[in-house]
Structure formats: C-alpha cells, structure tokens
Image (cartoon, rainbow, N blue to C red; front, side, top):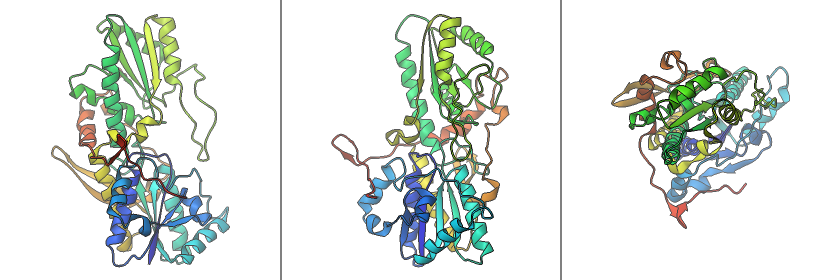
Length: 401
C-alpha cells in the first residue's frame, strides 16, 4: 500500500522532524511502497495536490536538511472539515483521492483542530467500511493538547523564549535606572509557553520577576502594584505576559476570528506598557516575540527534535498494527532521569479541548509560577542540533510545489 501525510496549523521548529519520522518509518517498511505528501493540509488532499516524497527523501542529505528546517515543508491550512452530515461530498472526494493513489493510511501532523479532522475522517472511513487508517501526530508550541505530557514543538519554543529573555535581561540591566520590560508570548487560552520562562530561575536569574497566565484572573490595578513592589527591590523588572490574558477594560484584543472560531490575539504587552508609563512613569518597553518563538530552529531543543521524529515513526508502526482514529502521545515516566514512552489516545478525546497549566503550579499572588514547574520544563529544552551550514547560516530545504 501507499500512505499519505500532511501538516496543519501553525508552524514549529519540530513539525518537519515528525514528517521525517513518518518518511523514515515508511521507507524502512516492506509493507509501504510510496509516501505521498499533501501540500496545504487536508485541502491538498481535496485539491489533489500531492507529491511523491520517496523521490525527494531517498537522499540522506535531504533528510538531514528536513530535520533542521523549521516551519512546514508541506505547507499548512486553516480548513475546518465540516461534519459529514452537513457536507458528505467533501468526504467522498477525500475517499476518492485516497483510492486513486492506493492510500492505506493517512497521517495528520497538527494541533487541536487537526485532531478534530483526524477523528472525523477515521469515523467516516469506519462508517463506509473502508480499511484506511487515520492517525494524528501532535504538534503545537502552545502545549495545550489533552492526554499528552507535552507536544513536539513546545520544547524548542520554550528554549528559544528563555534564551531570549536571558539576553533581554542582560540588555535591560546595563543602566543604573529603574526600568520595566514586558515580553509577550504566544498562548491563546493556556499559558504553558509564558510559564516555561521560569526555567531562567534555575540559571540564577531573578528574571522573569513577574509571569502572567490566562489561567488566572488578571487585574490591571494589581499588575501596577506588582510592578511597583518589584521595582522597590530591583532596578530592572522583567515581565512575561501570555497573549491570552483577559485585561479588563481594554480593547487590545482583535475581534477577528479564524475558521475554527479562535480570536487573533496580540497587543496586551503594548497596552500594559502604556499603563506603566502612566501609572509609574519609569522607562518601559514591550515586545512581542511573535513568530520568532515558534520557528527559531537555530535555538531548537535536541530533545524536542528527536522526540518529534520518534513520534512520527511510531505513528506509522501503529497504523501498520491496524490502529486508527488515535493521536500519538507522550507519557512521562520520570523527570530525573528524564524518561517518556509513546502511547495513543482516541483523537476524539483531544479534539476541541485545551489543557491548561495546573493551578497548583501558580503562586498564590497569581503573578509567577512555583519551582515545581521547572522540573517539568527543564528536560524538554535540553540539547542542541548540529546544523548543515551554507554561507554562514543554517541551510533549509524548500519544497517545489
């Protein structure tokens, strides 16, 4: 048989490593002949936009490049697969595409909404008596997928964030004057990425002095008092802010929403910068790390990259065992020594749910996280990749689609 694989949702530094894991396991299997990649997620399947990945990645050199290239080699989409009852023809087109190419298994690498597609497709194939297997491979820097200890892509984003904050702290501390720096991270409803910045405390840094997560109620008045209290003890105060916090009385959040109903968030840091200027009057600067935090492969976590590749390979082996309708996931065995095992969970238990930062990790003042969180985050950011370089920068592989 042949298999198909696609990528969806926001890009990360590790999503191509998961794609590589699928390709490697398929090339090693005597049961799989060809790996077809679908450009632009499930939309590529519908539009018959496939590429033969065997021809491209029979080269070990290209596979190495794929491992170190951030973002999605096959592109992505924000397409919400409708319910079968509302639009049967879409499902029939997908089934026809797979039949034309003798696809026996489909692997969808993505986040929460991609698991919704995985669940719907697997249920459809069961309903029509098709033997096509559908497996979800987790991905998101938000780390908010249910039933998995963590998600590929998160560790690299957390490593980049903490490294940047350490340098921001050094930069902001050169002058003998009171100042505040507000760094805004991604994280719509779950503050995992912002919380991961606590790892800096393990490195002897006081910063970040304040961390605000969407899991707890936010008060502008309390924020001002928190900053004043920190300024009484430190010349420079570093604040980490998750983009999804609900700032009462502000209009910084966009009303625009994507196909899945998610709002586009940004600007909370700038809003609070103006609050500090007005209420405190010291030097203040805000910054959004934006897309840099999710696609900075040069500061990627080797642990993250290796695990992403392993879970992609495990997905293929799971499909060959006859499994369908599941998402691959990590189960943590221990923090030190760090050990995880790869298991599965029904995709329907993941789709359209969000895993939040445990409330017991958040301090009673609701403006930082406890040291217990460091034990969780620290193993995920270990190790560095070795890169193939070209003209002084990492070389990337780019699809010709």
